[in-house]
Length: 129
Image (cartoon, rainbow, N blue to C red; front, side):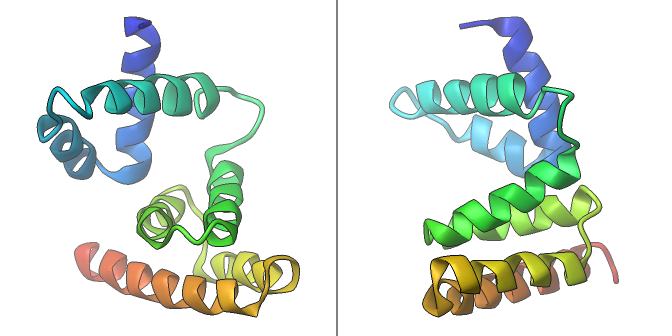
């Protein structure tokens, strides 16, 4: 593993998903799933999110669409909060999910809207909005 890329990824991961969430994920990892934590942090967050070509806001919107298409509500909820941290507005989130309805189907969008609304409410409560 590349420790420099891991540290870069860890910093980006914390900025998007929140320091507390990421530190809890790393601290609760055991021998079984720690290799996955390292892999995700190093390659997903360090090697890909760490590239300069796309801004974090764009990457967040792409993630929302892909996670909705894949029906991954847990990851979607986490990335909705990350998208808000990256400057994606509620209106932009809604537009991404409307696009999901057209290209991935209404059931995917219905579930994604439900998950996103919950994530937005949780985020706003935690941020005092």
